[in-house]
Length: 300
Image (tube, rainbow, N blue to C red; front, side):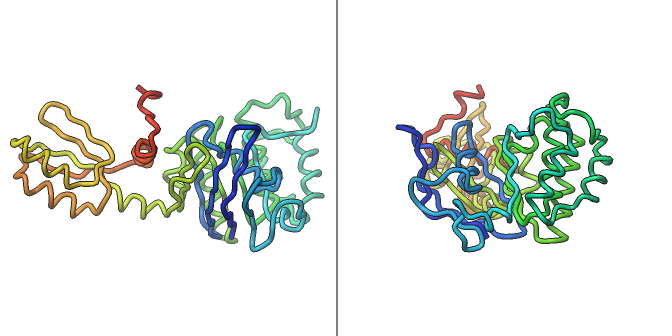
């Protein structure tokens, strides 16, 4: 288990991470999502022991991570911009990581490189961004560590490769209790793979919950109620995160149980009423809006 307690980090007068307390269970995919500049990369660097927190603690299986080589041997970190030796070929990096990680699986490396159709003897600096991402993921998986930290893992991968990587992660989890921690701003990419998500905003953690529990507590409904005065009174009884009106159609995103929300709106004798599926992206927009971050200014 990975545990942080009141972790904070500042750079000069900029608070990059602010008092984050979170637990990441083994054998589950943890998605770290947030806006650009929310502190995702800084938080991953502290989990990796690259940065020392100004305040708080970071532990992996009960051990402090900073300046603790035995603890660091249990994870592999893939930054957004993966570093490779100058003029290195993939086999050079394989040999390097096989010395760093005693359990590095060379035979699997050979197989995955062939499966991904990557030339093991071609200079990495001639690879495309997507090819470099593929190589870094292969090296990370073959290191056979308990934890894998990924910063924008799917950025640069085409749809087929994205699904292939997700399948590899799922296989690792099923076989050996593997735990990926994936930081991304691409919510749609995380929705179908994550068990738990942590939502970062302006350096703080707004929520950290199982995805199924998050979705069970926030719902989207549409209704048409002829009596607008009655509609407004009913809406006032709901915990509304977002509200939109298009003609006579009202769309609400509310916190609470779906059954309770629908029962309240039924009191208005609606001409039309239905619950709609809610995506992780919509939940993110709703939650950040509650915290005072108007994301609509960026996307509209």
